[in-house]
Image (cartoon, rainbow, N blue to C red; front, side):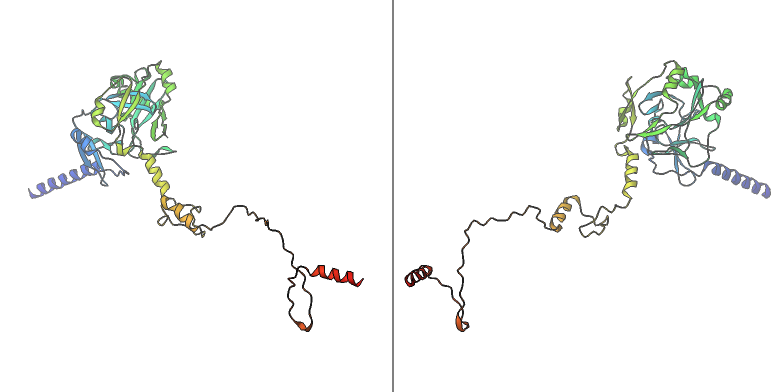
Amino acid sequence: MKKLGLSIFVLALVSLFSLESNAKENITVDRGIYFHSELQSYGNWHKLKGGINVWRPSSVSYDWQPYKYGRWFSTDNGWYWDSDEDFGYITFHYGRWYYDDYYGWVWVPGNIWAPAWVDWRYDNDYIGWAPLPPYAEFSIGIGISFTNNFHYGYNYWNFVSYNNFCSPNVYNYFASNKYKYRIYSKTKYRNNYSYNRGRVINRGVDLKYVRERSRGNIVTRDIKRVDNIRDLNKRDKNYVRSYEPFNNRNIVDRDKRNDRSKVEPKNRTKNIDGNKISRDVRPQKDTRNKIYRENRPKVDYRPKIEKRNIDRPTRQPELKPRRNNQPQRPNNNRNTPNKERVKNKRKR
């Protein structure tokens, strides 16, 4: 009896350990924004292996999956997913989705906004999409790159014909599971992410091609960005509202500027002696001109003009040598030359 109880206890521990090991995957996330307060009422938070916090929606059906209940719009930022779910304004525009064997679909937080984080497949008859895994990272100039050799199976993709691609209830037109494998094997993979004016662009399948195949059944909208959740309920047929917190806008540009700030200053930042100024002791902008004015060499670049002498030159009388080496004195008698002339006349 004791052996039976011990064996049952060991089996229970093994089963519990297997469930925990399946629930914890080695996932790393950089600079995540968790939106705890916004998502708390729509699901639960869990911690995976490595200390990564993930969110799982509650009150969803067993066959629920991301990017299912909503519709597609064509915008200036590419294909925009307008979700019908209350939590969709966050989870389908930030972060990634991951299918865990224990929890099912969980959302991995992220901090960069995009119209939709999905992969694309297409052919002449069908177009399909699947959520990007957390191993897909976005970088400026490169787009999407994968840090791990990972991909979803064909069951995680949604395929629809071009005529119903922009339908309001697009999930009603999904291809059934028994045809997914055949469609998946015939379609081509497409990934076209770019960056422009501080925004991530998800072009996906080319708009002109989709418009030709759908015979013009493409709905276009403008995106109006708001930083208040209450403004999301205001709907209009000409635009869709996207939630972007004020302190999270243009976060890609901020990261790019921070990377530039780490670069050492170039040699052009030198003082007057020619020595390089370190970044810590570099003077502020308001004191640079003052320091330069005080330390620069004083050089007069004005053209030099000689002063003209307008006084008449004075003629100095010649000094006659005298005997006995006596110093000679100037003759101040102005009439001396005339007296000599008179004497000479008298002698004649």
